[in-house]
Amino acid sequence: MRLIAAGAAYAGVFAALHARCFAAAWDAAAFSDLFAGAGVFGAIAEDGGAPLGFVLCRAVADEAEILTIGVLPEGRGAGVGSALLRHAGEAAARLGAARMFLEVAVDNAAALALYARAGFAPVGTRRGYYRECHEGRVIQTDARILARVLEADGATDDPQK
Image 1 (cartoon, one colour):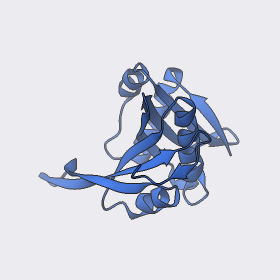
Image 2 (tube, helix red, strand yellow):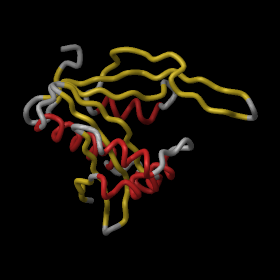
Image 3 (cartoon, helix red, strand yellow):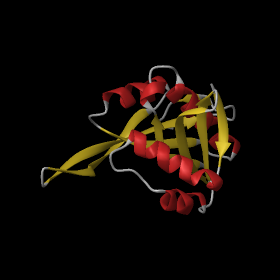
């Protein structure tokens, strides 16, 4: 597996991967708009030319945020998510970020476990952040806000700092 730094030229690839990972997929225009913003960077994990996952981040001043991250079903459980998180932290630290944030649905046990292993810890909750429509009903799910401290080498430390 290798990680490829990916920018705006990859907006269509990000959109296709996002659609395979999430029901409420972002389109290529949304990714293009995000890449046009300051401090936005991304990466795609691939093996033998086949994409396995992606991460899109933004670093501004001393903080960074993972805007979206996804691993295709065929890449899950193989370290792809961990590699993408490590890459995101290292890249954000190189850009001057001291702390990285992300949000995840409170019922996404697999992602919560991955983030905990990567050194992220809870710092807050966004009530009703995720909204989906099921059989004409809107279902709201809370988002857990997680953070970790980044060292110059991308290592983690106490997320409360």
